[in-house]
Image 1 (cartoon, rainbow, N blue to C red):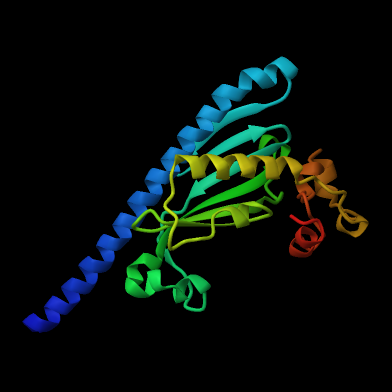
Image 2: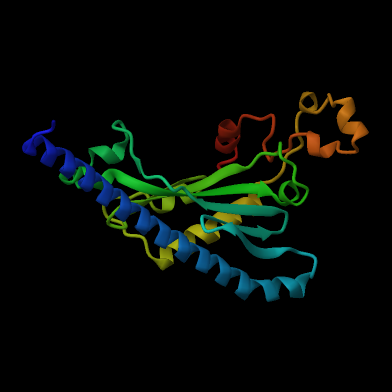
Length: 231
């Protein structure tokens, strides 16, 4: 049987960690919903302007659940998703060595919002083998301090975790920069060897392209490609 002192220690551990987790998740969920509202606003403002250029250029917002939404523009789809778990930075991460974290280790626990770039046709034609690419992920802690890890300028805009609190201005900048990055991130012709074989079944089912994996950097080393092109 657990005595009173041991029970108090156990109770304190459970409640302290759970309360921190809940606060982090609620904060992240709030920011995700704010991001969703900003996305809707961007679409509502710009869609009429895009239509004036061409009615065939897609510029749409959609959501499949309370934890993810999609922005479709030109030939891309930006998928934004909220992870329902809370994470801690690894011990070797530079953030863990800051005085901000050392003063309160609970500040190192964050919720994460992910942004992925997919080809519009991958979603439209349900090409399940196609690839999406992580553009950015936003880390948010119990005090609404945040840090952004991402490609090109996204990764340089907000990397002062101890001193930066997330707000509407920063969220709008992150979202707009992610959209621009997706548009500039072009689809490259895959290496010949990546598409030289196809199954009889795919041809017989008239489903050839659904069985060929497609991605903007398929067959190339993604990290090396990013470094080479400054992305």
